[in-house]
Image 1 (cartoon, rainbow, N blue to C red):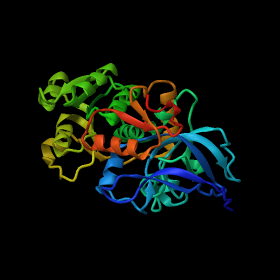
Image 2: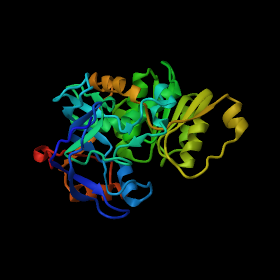
Image 3: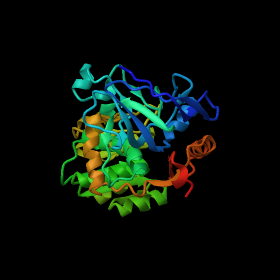
Image 4: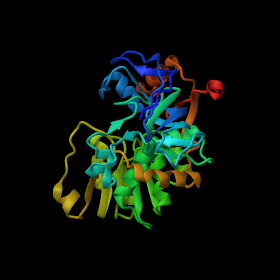
Length: 357
């Protein structure tokens, strides 16, 4: 049974390709018996949102509220929800899956045939409220601020899933291509999984210096060939795990070439260019594995949040700017992301007293 809440909420919405997002007032969504209504406290602005606005990845239906990195407080819980109550702090798993199909019941919910991603195919978090199935609302520990909880749901979760796919064990070595939001999480998580050495490959000195704060060995690909350098630093052995988080066929090729005997190479970065492989020298000769990694699982998030709560994963440096729930502020942020302005991570804070600082 749905009960109507009445009232309207403000939301920043996609209204068409290459058009500025617009502020609209829409009805506060009704919730079913197994849903929760969440008052949004923080919603991260992701590079994907710029892709959606530009039409690189289609949004439907239109108009639609964007924002898929969301944290907030339970405002109302459906009649059958027992594990959450109003006032609970939560962050949201952005894939709304059916929970009952083969992929959902085997824990691979990102492949659910009915999956809808919030802020892409169903209303997202650039709004005062959002309704989701209760299982998508993960309790957010008090130690983690809302804005950090929001960004954990995207970049850190994707990095965590990629590392789990790599089967990294204690004592192994890792190379991570790309030291942005994904890469910085991957560096710290690789250390937490017991990697003895983590090499971070990037062109940007600022990102590399942050990587060194997390005990990575920086490799500036502008100044040196990363394959030659990593081989040199590992006495010719190469690494056990290489993770590509940039999405260029060149860096995918380099990730393959730094893998040693029985190495695992995980591709996370999106590219529309094919990857060429020398099957003997780069793949079967050393029994190297090439692994695709897509998104993350609902079941991975409680452990990820626990690592953040224990500060094994430091998210304090990710978020650098807070903005109010305002169309101009969000559009300007998306413009900057399109220009690859900087490593600045912006989060929308609807209670705007704390924003703009």
